[in-house]
Image (cartoon, rainbow, N blue to C red):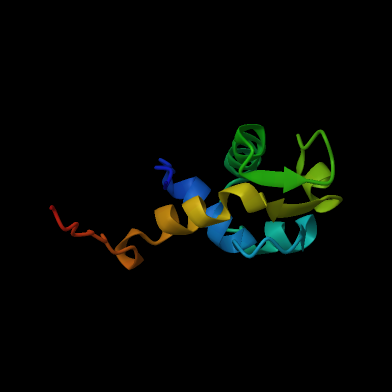
Length: 102
């Protein structure tokens, strides 16, 4: 059973920068990868993904860029498959099963 996730552009950009492999990424590297996004928008988006549970963080409070830089982040393994489908919807193929009726 697949989950339908509705992600906005900022969330998609942040998840792509973080990578959906589940490997932890330092906050400094994440900030460097997201340099085109404003700091306030970046922190709000990251905080939203953490509160929903899609992203796990090594720190409880991530409210400033300094907090982000001193933390590690990774995608929650429970959502990796659903996030992969929502990031790349063209890759999913609709599979239909034909059942033989007796």
